[in-house]
Amino acid sequence: MLDNVQAACRRVGRDPHGVTLVAVSKTVDASRLGAAMAAGLELFGENRVQEAESKAPLVPGAHWHLIGPLQSNKARRAVELFDVIESVDSVDLARRLDRRAGEVGRAPLGVYLQVNVDRDEAKSGFLPERLTAVLPGLAEMPNTRLLGLMTVGRLVGSAEEARPTFARLRDLSARLRELVPELGAGLSMGMTDDYAVAVEEGATVIRVGRALFGTRPGRVAEGPVSGLAGSA
Image 1: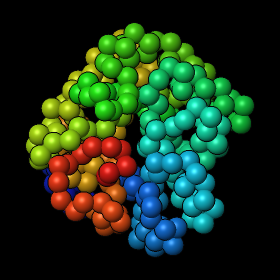
Image 2: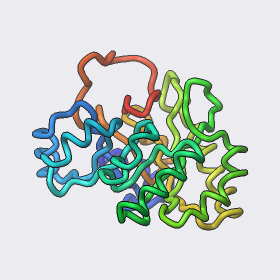
Image 3: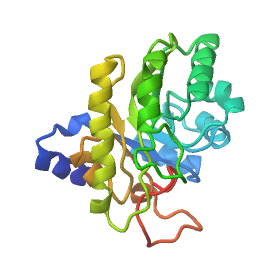
Image 4: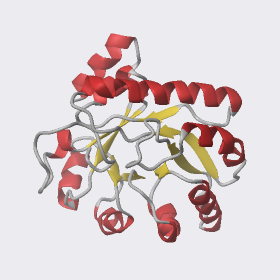
């Protein structure tokens, strides 16, 4: 898999060191994550606070990103557990995380702002025009650091069909950073079926699970790529 990332970087003249792999570990036993750490993986992505809470003590030395939706009532525990929260999809959640990060001494907490660049009614995230309007206020929050933008791809038939989604997020990031320099240049996008295309379009973080840990129980082995954050 890392060879594919390097190849994608070469195709567009990027440094492979500029791409971070988040190993999506939802439903994967902690014992397997220990083996993954022994093989060199140390950054894992979880969809649910409760599942991460049960695993984290069993995988010492690991780092954790929350990549799934976060309920406001679990914000404090998420701030305590995760190094980065990638799924900040509303002003209210951003403010709550900022407040909790200050309360528990986790400032500055790294966050990504989730954007619904495809305007898919089935997806969460800021619409681009809404994010443009509220970003200056989000950048002023004292206890969070805006690492960049994240998106969850729509269901498509091939990896190449996902390219416009990734290009839209990259272009939006560039426009927003001209307006609000405090927004980081991070782009979290791309999963198992389309991460190479995402890297070609500028992804700095890819969220890959199935290519590392195999198909989860109950998942259809073949079908459209992308989809929900957990179907990595």
